[in-house]
Amino acid sequence: MHERKKLRYTLSFLVLIGLTIVLLIWNLVSGSSVMSVQDAFSALTGKNADPTAQSILLHIRFPRMLAALLLGGALSVSGFLLQCFFGNPIAGPFVLGISSGAKLAVALLMVYSLQRGLVLHSFWMILASLVGSVAATAWIIAVSGKIRNMSLLIVAGVMTGYICSAVTELVVAFADDANIVNLHNWAQGSFSGTDWSDVRAIAVTVLVTTVLVFLLSKPMGAYQLGETYAENMGVNVKRFRVLLILLSSILSACVTAFAGPVSFVGVAVPHLMKRLFGTARPLLMIPACFLGGGVFCLFCDLLARMLFSPVELSISTVTAVFGAPVVVWMMLRRQEGRV
Image 1 (cartoon, helix red, strand yellow):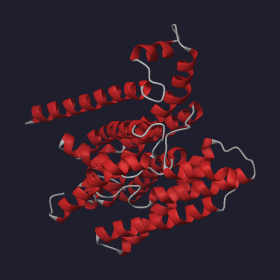
Image 2 (image 1 turned 90 degrees about the vertical axis):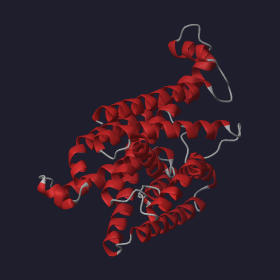
Image 3 (image 1 turned 135 degrees about the horizontal axis):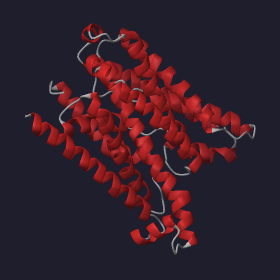
Image 4 (image 1 turned 30 degrees about the horizontal axis):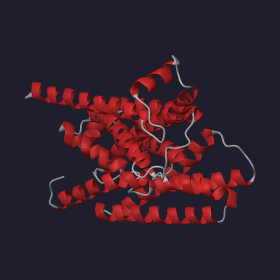
């Protein structure tokens, strides 16, 4: 039995890595300017490269592709942490309104800076998004203390998201005409427009935070078995819960700061990874969720760019098409007592 589990885990990781490589190459060669794998390789290495193709790959597709991979992984890990915290497989940054709280904070900062002609450093974007995420999370935690029914908690999170989104729309509506288009595109969710400075900020924030999350794998495993068990295993539960929420907020805040709100990834992907691996062990689920989230967002971003080209869909539109049915299925199974 142990050997079968090890084989399943190994094959599952190989499948995820293989899908990641395939989608990375597919994203590179696909677009309004189609090129072969050989042309893309030549453009990246600089050997007999076409200057136009090289510019498209290095300054548009490559940064966008890396952003989709990193931010998709971050959102999925964030969702897994929230599910661990609330003990509910339907919990996630978008469903609980946390992404909407981050979106509101960033929108306020963007309007303020654009009206004054200020150029924002990515640090301030992430900080504003983090403040919004933490505020929304604190509200959900406060509500969870009053509401014991997790279904009602999800409804409260959805309502919180609607309120934050409505206020964000008001903020965008009163922005200067010249700034409305940029704000509107960002508010819909998109990986487009990402440059190398954004990728560096994303990589540092996401990878450092994910490593810190991975270091919490052992106490997370104990926490999944109940707070009493975790305390008996020497886990400081209060401090651990604060760390869990803080790390989850940083990951979801980074996504919202650079790509806007991205729906259902944080709920659907962790569940799919649990089904694929047949376990909920954090030691396996954290890297699995990161890879799975990256694969999911790379695939959805490819569809967003190519499905109705030259018209580009928002990333949340595509992720909702694939993620929402998974959430509905989970809710039905939970109602039947199978999740």
